[in-house]
Image (cartoon, rainbow, N blue to C red; front, side, top):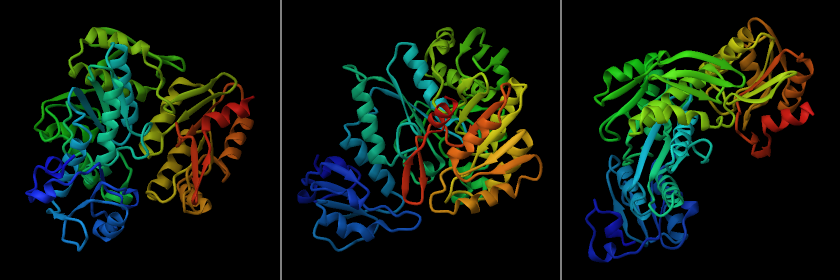
Length: 462
């Protein structure tokens, strides 16, 4: 596609406008002949430092926030505009894949993956085309614009000849702060909750909230769905100018729960779900409201819930007798607290919790999670999550600093920790393995090793 068509906001001379570009790239290492390189500035690097590498690899033109001497045209835009220029170029080269799609943006600390996955599953159960994008499908929860738009193109193409349907996207606070979803025309945006996480990046909860709240403007969507039982959700509902559907736990009446599933009445319609845990009631209520706001009839939406499978690694019951084993992605203080309280509400035996915290990430939450685990579990085994480039022993030291009461053990190797939990568990106990959920690898240093909590537990149970 010619640059004049890719970059409509820029004034280009005839020769530059006629240059053909085959892709839009923001990583100079990924450049190939025919690419347009957009030099973005990150938190630690200036993209213009990599212009020469991009050109050497075949970039035919460069978009940057300042002039750089190069053998190809360098198009200078203001730092305030570069993200929108990138987004429009990425959208156009992907063929405008938002046409015919209803896009849903889901943000919040916990529940993004579950809600986005449930929205897509409900729409499919209703006979429509649908998919979700996020933690389960992409390396980054919310990818940068070139990957985001190409993924949307692939999803739309998979929807068949009419190329219409619903795509639910997880929208992270990092993505909002870094402008990755600029220009994405959502039909509905949704907020699940906000609690302690990512303060290594945002520093304060106010900055974290501001990033999330920025999604709730007319620039992104015509309406929102907000979990009203969260203090930040209630605050967001008061401050946004968008029309909002508020969702509350009280929307589910006559609620019954077990390790086999959940049932409740929603808007006068009985809903049965295979999802387990009270916070999955919240996730399902959010998804039901979102799909209703997309235009589907409430009675049909409620009936569709019975066809929805459990979300991988979210209160996933690996074994339900002698002892029970639950694997969950809970990796924040609030997520772990809600998980363990949900287990306690449904289970009379002891709770044996295995968890750790990721390396190179927010250290402040570690002792908080240690406190939660030991208060709400009968036995806690503190182990490694993804230590990355941190010393696993030091991470565990941070966690156990908060373990002021209760019984806990330290076992660095995660497989050994799970084995220990299963050995000490009685027939009526439940083993909760938290932190990694659906993940199938463990990152230790520069190595990415195969490791799946669910597979490990099943093998040990044999």
